[in-house]
Image (tube, rainbow, N blue to C red; front, side):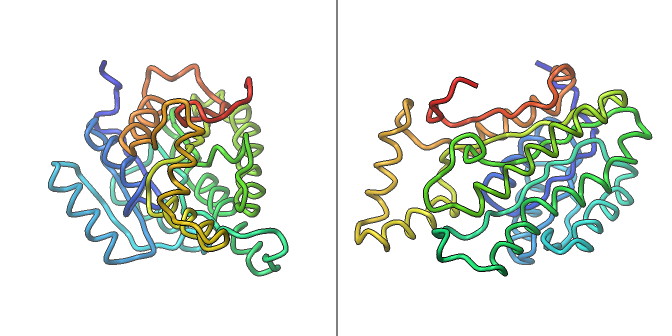
Length: 262
């Protein structure tokens, strides 16, 4: 299937590793020009080289999207480099795993800036470029936690839910410009973040991180963690011309873990 992504300009935040990098690679392999950012310079450079080795045209910029000015600069500099923007993937690492009584005001503000405000800033900045072309795709990388809260992730459960409300509202406001806005809600993928959560739980329970992961896998009908490339394929479809009638929705990709009906 031709997804119609050749020469599209895709901006992927938080793309130096993990799911963000998998999405950048998937879009690039479909022919898109890809801009990536990360706050870690070494990881960013490694990701850039890896993508270029695959023949992908890449622009990279060091940016911490939890800082509004840097989030905005990522979009404007990327659009200036490539001559516009067609696709925005809002993605960032998550807040630390902790219980509610372990949190404080600063941690909550950090989570808000990282996962909600960054999405607001980058989306607001990219919209004029998409309106100019009368076409655009915005995909927010959230979490299955927005449908089924995850124990120990109180900040993520709360803040990411705000992204869902934002996306649903924007999907209606931007529909007349052929701009779609959707959310992808990953379940358990064996990334460094998931490994860190397993370690945190193991510390609290006195268990072993590998046993925590095995317990999670037992709850997944497909009995395994997801592969990042599987998420990349879903995002590519949502960004394609074939997904032109899909907007304002939140799609979980979790191996069947979510037990809800909708």
